Image (cartoon, rainbow, N blue to C red; front, top):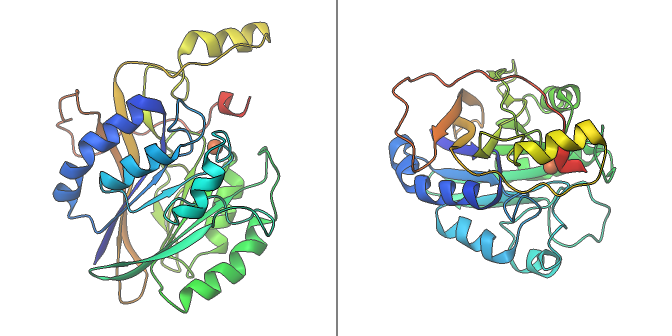
Length: 284
Ligand SMILES: [Fe+2]
């Protein structure tokens, strides 16, 4: 059995410090074979740098996925060519720097990761993710049936449609981008695990990881403002996926909701259920 930890959008220094601090312990606790994190908000809440990518990889992350904020830090354009374990969305037009998928070897066989960006309420509007996924998944399945897809998008409907579209073709489709963990983890009839949004790794006394007051004032006043990353208590949210590596079918998916390094471990075994959707200041 392949055990994969998928962590949602890492927000700023609080988020990445928490991931780096807790990952060794989580690896041991869950006997993890592979770790995927979405890092597109890891640099002060906007984009990711080469240095941060390397820090995450050194901490035990196998692949870093991204989304609409991939280009926010200018240096990332050249770094993408050097580090194939940092993905940008697959459905950019041909010629975009970097890659949208990767296959890596583990002790239990190969595992592939594909990063795709949805289109509804997303900027920029990329190529059709469904059309882009078809040939990418077909090609990857010639190498391995163990495939995890990060579906980075705003709407529940488009992410569920992507999950249903890929049912039976990949091991798991996990949504990212909204920073709010959904409670719809399930395994579709074809054997594909699904969670509409993994949630975020970041400060919870916040609005999507940013300080509350500036975001609230923006909605109240409509005036431009900057949105600093919030401080305080951090949670690590995502999903644990168990895969039969002989078939690529998911056996189990469990939501992850772990405290940051400064918080005492939660005694309850079951993760909390959160609301589904929220405004998206990260798109402003
Ligand atoms: Fe995003």
